[in-house]
Length: 315
Image (cartoon, rainbow, N blue to C red; front, side, top):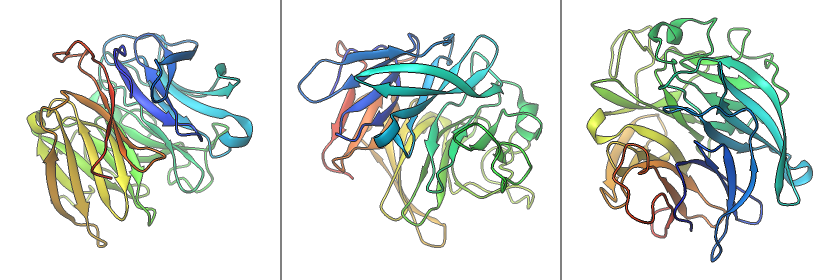
């Protein structure tokens, strides 16, 4: 679909099937479509890139078809933020801040945002390289946040704040299956990366535990991998509990089958080494899986990297 992109991070599908792709370091958003070169549609204001930070997640609002509103998650000079933009006439405008104060760092900035089936905006954040943030309910770091489109706190959030779940190290993938179950990927440190089933108000253990635990205070992961095999970033959830995870260090696409009772029944490693580091995977309007590579950052790029590739045979 596209090649020679400079550190792409996320994509969002437009109603006509084209995609908007964020470029982390430049703060630009490009539009891609079959048979044409990517076109820059705008630059998100206030992006201060560095390390793993920059322009990260992108999400179209549920009302995008009528008002062109979308949201971006980015690193600013002092924090990570969620901003509201408008896409109209082939270009971006705006940049009003709806959430600020998410801890920033050279690492662990989180960054994925998605609207859930309830119409709320969810954001995966990182601990900002300060472990204690993850267990601190007054911090927005190391959390999954749940936000009203105007940036306010939903009345039914569990802690009277934007915090939906906590005890996370670095969440970069979120998605829902057909029955409304929410899943999230999480980077581990030295031992285990995780796929989690997200429960309202849950504590997922970091930094007290990493990976499996029998401690009743914490929600145990659905599936774990050695960090060399995964480092999962974006995820796609298709059908009834089929979860795909884009693996950076693992350089493969993981497929996990989750049963109706919430058990990870099986997992398969797909396309191992075929495309290098995978930053994101998504289901396109055409029902096929799209992957975003991340080889210009900590990888070994081929001449056409970085790329957006459609996989014809999985979704």
